[in-house]
Amino acid sequence: MINDNGTLTENTSIIDSNNRGFNYGDMVFETMRCSIGKPLFWEDHYFRLMASMRILRMEIPMNFTMEFLEAQLVATLQANNLENQTARVKLAVFRNTGGLYTPKDNGVGFVIQASPLDEPFYLFRDEAYEVELFKDYYLAPGLLSTLKTNNRALNVVGSVFAKENNFHNCLLLNTNKNVVEALNGNVFLVNGNTIKTPPLADGCLKGIMRKQVMDLITSSKDYELEEASISPFELQKADELFITNVIGGIQPVSQYRKKVFAHKVAKDLFQKLNVKIRLTS
Image 1 (cartoon, helix red, strand yellow):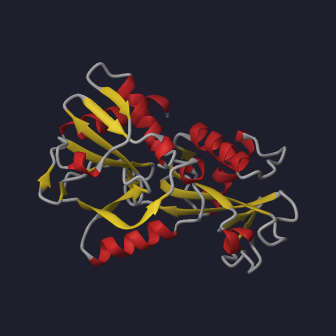
Image 2 (tube, rainbow, N blue to C red):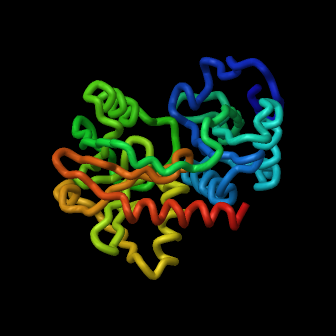
């Protein structure tokens, strides 16, 4: 079942050929992990969605309150019999049909999809996980690159490259040749007790799990957070490297080229993350 502007329907072909998200990428979305009928970090997702819509000059409907959209998410979970398990939910907001590059109006519609996840909790995966730089194309540093839109050609081509070359993931560079993020998440680099992650100005996604991990680091006496550009040359000098996203949590990287990484800090932060989730659920 899909939630089409508040109407639950079994029709999975609700997007017509004139949809602006389909034609021009005129769409923002939030992918959430839901546990027993409740979206994790919902407040952060909601405010990121509202900020993204403002940046793209979409008109925010008066009924797009946090309570209204959460109720729509829950209704979609219930319609798919997923209210008592862990699920992946995607909330997509697109501008109304009409116009070419210039829209006829700035009103919006939304679609919500839900699917089950195998693991009920975040799992710490310390098996082999090798990454490589993807250097065929580059991200542009700037505000638009930080948004969750469906302009994801770079991520798709990079994912094909990773699959063809037997890598688990790839790291993306911006036009300044700095490491920005992974194909499906934010990047953190560990040296001693300093944990470094690229700033939003470099073009990395304003990730929800990125925010949770940064909060954990700044609230801990054991670590120091540094938001600064990461050169590719720093990767092989790092003690650890890990990737974050809201579906998988924290994924430690085991190898980049000839460098093999530890995962002690990643595991510690993973444990702190699960404690935080239990305390706020």
